[in-house]
Length: 79
Image 1 (spheres, one colour):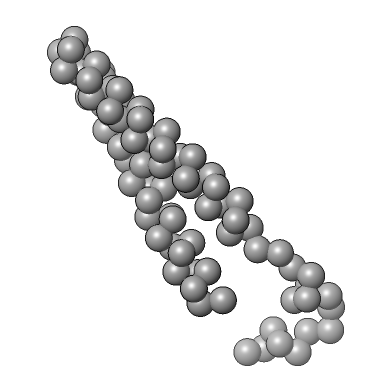
Image 2 (cartoon, rainbow, N blue to C red):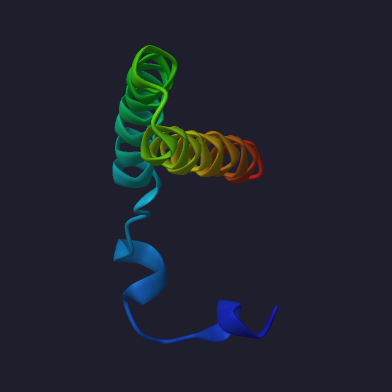
């Protein structure tokens, strides 16, 4: 690979942000699931359509966070 012949200190001292990204994804996953359940319960209790949309958005956030955690896990395995 052409980056191996660099003369700077970046390859030696560069730090990966995967740890911070993993923590943020875990927080987003937990909050997304909790919010989706809360909004779904509100939708069933009140029957208002706005709670359904809120639940769908929160569930989408949880799915994106779960996919990001899988990507992070794969990248950590290849290191």
